[in-house]
Amino acid sequence: MFEQRTRLIIQDKYMELVGIVIDELRNMPVQQVSDSIDVPFENVWDAFAEPFQHEAEPLYNSYNDVVSDMCQQLTEQLTLTELQLLWLVSDGALEWEDDDEFPDEEQMLNDVAEELYSWVEQEAEEPELADEYEVEIELDEEEDEPPRH
Image (tube, rainbow, N blue to C red; front, side):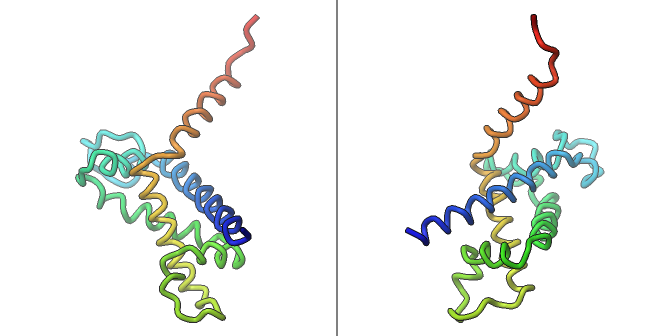
């Protein structure tokens, strides 16, 4: 019971971080990453997610490093406690052989950044946050509208 609740808290934190990454990517114009004039996307998130949703790979490599770097930077902002908790569900933790101690902080940072990146890829492939994002935009737009009489 306790382990399941802990896992849910960790998953919620990963989803929070995924949301932050996606928001930052949605606010990053494609031109900031690619000088190509023919790119049909307005932002980096759309360019990154498109190949996952249509089982293609035309632009994936162009944006892979940007997303990976963003995951790494976000991971570096975590407290040690957050890092340790998130590390517990990473592939690095599954491969770790010492049950009594955590690896050094650098190893945990890399493992959590890789895990976060995989969550971002998963969101690109099967969007769960997209619906929440659309509702949020609609609510923001409604708040901006003048009251109707």
